[in-house]
Amino acid sequence: QVQLVESGGGLVHAGASLRLSCSTSAPYFSVYTMGWFRQAPGKQREMVATIISGGSGSYADSVKGRFTISRDNDARMVHLQMNSLKPEDTGIYYCNAVSGRNSYWGQGTQVTVSS
Image (cartoon, rainbow, N blue to C red; front, side):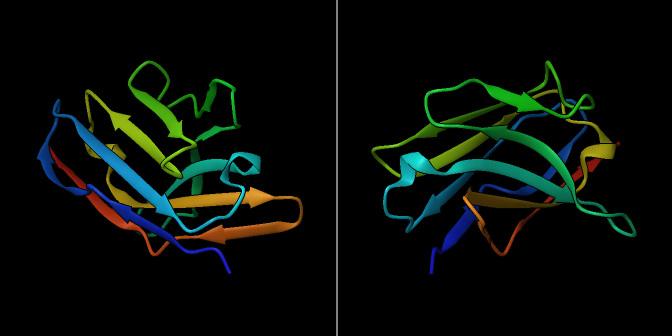
């Protein structure tokens, strides 16, 4: 069983930055597609950004140009740098790891952006 632990969430004002991190216990971490998803109150969980090993990130249109996903295969970690945060970025942010038919989720970290 792969464990994912997110950190770095918090309460910030609009325009601020946060950096989320996700550490994993995944063996052969480099084979996993890693991603960040978020869920706002009353809404469905949505993809924010994903990254494959050795590849660039893919982003939701709503965060393009503001968020950057990165991974450190040696440390088995994935990060999400979030700049120019907006109130609509508020939600619980989840780390996700996918390999084949296996998909794992972290417990989530709360991000709240006040206007």
